[in-house]
Image (tube, rainbow over all chains, first blue to last red; front, top):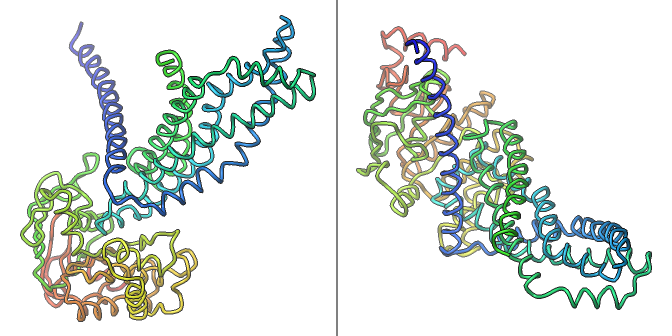
Length: 268
Length: 243
């Protein structure tokens, strides 16, 4: 190999090495962000009023969309489930099919995706704007910890809100499945709920709760991180905020689905 | 009070501060001037501890900012006020809530006392009657004055001003400078004013330091600066003064 070819190879290796190191650095910063966020959860004083406001924002303001998505998801499950099960003469199992699908999988995942789209993107945009308008610097200069004001309330609020929203999604979804399966397609009410009670255990509900808790942490971690580091990793100004918001939503979606797979396959 | 020693800072290989050295004595107010993008705001953020230098140090009241962590850094920042170029008011809070914010978070004063102090501060910056408005509902000059009130409400010993008159018309710009001068007389803070308001700022400062190519090119009284024979200083002061 000639000297110039060796130099070209070295240059390519250096370039890819640089990109790899940059990504490792970002992952490290992101990991530290999560560690700090959890650290400040346990350091008083907690900003209780801010936490309540965030619960209102994340939880209450997402309710209507959760109602609608939960209801229609259950209704679609009712139709699809009935069509599939009737091929085997197993329509009686429509209740457990709808219930288990919602409680173990669709409830936590869909709720997390809805909350990412509504509250997560807003978190990134809000914190990103605070970053580019130096409001976060102002907090620091007042000797106040930005994590305590901006991240911890969101983290605690989502830990409280997301399992509750998931529960609402599940209940509404089961009701949607009931409307289609029982009221429209003629499965018996007793059969629908009776079989559901027979085949569903507390373990299934706990699995859903664990999932929604971990999804909540992912949403706040990714969305607050992307907002907090607007201008560092995503460019400046309004465009930087816009890019940070898009990245936050996309990364949250991907991480939620990947984490869901690992939780399902490894833990349960 | 503030000592900057051999400060170096670069961004993506572009050296902004190139071994800058500067000293500000207690109670003194200096103006920091220089071309756009020469690193004045970067220097100010180093003095506030918002940025870490690549090399060199910033010593405030005998303490090296680079070595301060946790509550020691917080204690130092409690003595410091910063007027940001854009005001950096919290946009989801009213003017009153913005000015009250540091008092509520950092002191144990009763609501009545906080209210009294906030109204007094707002009156000083001629913002009485605008306390219920949000930052987006007031003019640029009012935002600057509200930010000044917020920065001064904790009676800081050190005040850093990042272009307090930029974006304002000359009349309001002068009003802001006069306000800074009045506040200095009252609080006797040590101040650094990053500005392009030449020569208006010369009336309210003790010294003027001019930055060029990452170092202090000229440092002296306003009169010394105006009579400087340095062609770079003359070109800058002449141009800015004419502007």
